[in-house]
Length: 510
Image (cartoon, rainbow, N blue to C red; front, top):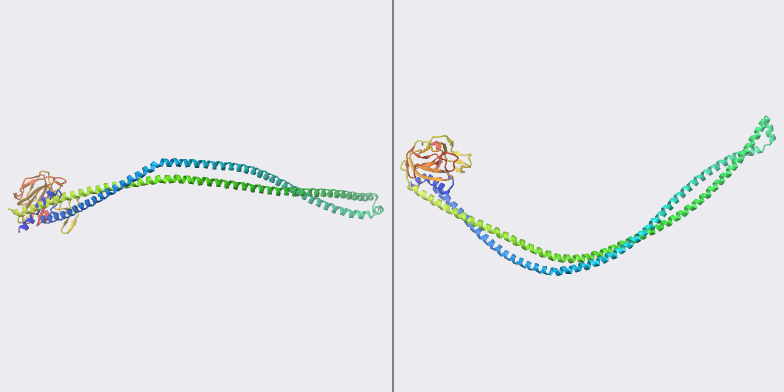
């Protein structure tokens, strides 16, 4: 029976947790002090695990930090050796550079000689090429003039051929006409003047016939003269044609000779050009070979310097990386130490909460209400509008709880009654004040009254209490005044009813 009475007084343990923990506990979440004590012990185990993890992290970070420091020392030693090697190279470098400069000067003098000799050869070849090109141009000009003369002579021959053709046609026509006249004249010559006279109708007709005969003879003489002239012209044209043909053959022979000369000149030009190319390539090869030798020396020295610089850079990067690793490990070590301290602090707080809850349990087991409320309705603790009801809530500041097997994101474990600040708050029934306390962001100033072994009520957010813990109160007796302390959005009374450790909708009892 003593254990049953203690569970009825669960609200007192809840308020102690609210006061010691600094949180906003609700009666639904902190219903049973024995359950709460088990929860705190579980949290202690969790934080003990975190403490062990933090200590393990400290050990790992310390080991990593020590390893990094050792490696940093090795890297610093290597860096010192590299710096010494670099100093040695830099000490030798001036002599090597002076020797390199001498080699460069010698190579440059050799290259200058090669270039001068090549330039002289190139200039002579260019002069020879220029003279040969002039001969080529001259021969080409002669060849073009000869070609023009050949064209002109060919045109003259074509004209003479046309003239000969025409003369031959004229001669053929004249010979044809002369044949006609010769045949006619032959017939007329066989007749006598007496026949012409006898055949004439009159003397006048005889004179006409004689005149016609003389005209035919004159025409015949003209045709013979014309034929002789045409033959002479044809013979002259044929002679000139032969002369032109001879001239054309001479010009063609000259043209062939000029073409052969031009071909030989061009071959000579190509040979000179190829010789210039070969000599230039040989000079370039010698220059390139010498330049490659000098460049190899430069690259060798530069490679030594670059290798030394890369080694120094790699060592510096390794040193920086190790320094960063040391900083990271130091940060991890600091974070692990902070986690260890936080775990220790949380364990200490949970130890105090557990001790407080144990004390409240002991106090609740020793306390017995002297007055009880057996049946009937509870009285309203104050008059005012209902600001928020019991149950699931849309307000984010309400806690997340599991109520009768269902999980709610936000749940209001009582009702809120609105009234002006300073309004008296009265006991809902006869009972004994089993707890009074204050939570800065939970219930604020609040009190718990036990009315019988199964029923208790809670009054929160008051501005002032006028009863002390352990006091016996009557229904309607003033226990405090309206306020807005703790987690409150304005003056109001948060009123809760608990039956057998479970929160109940207060409206079913009012």
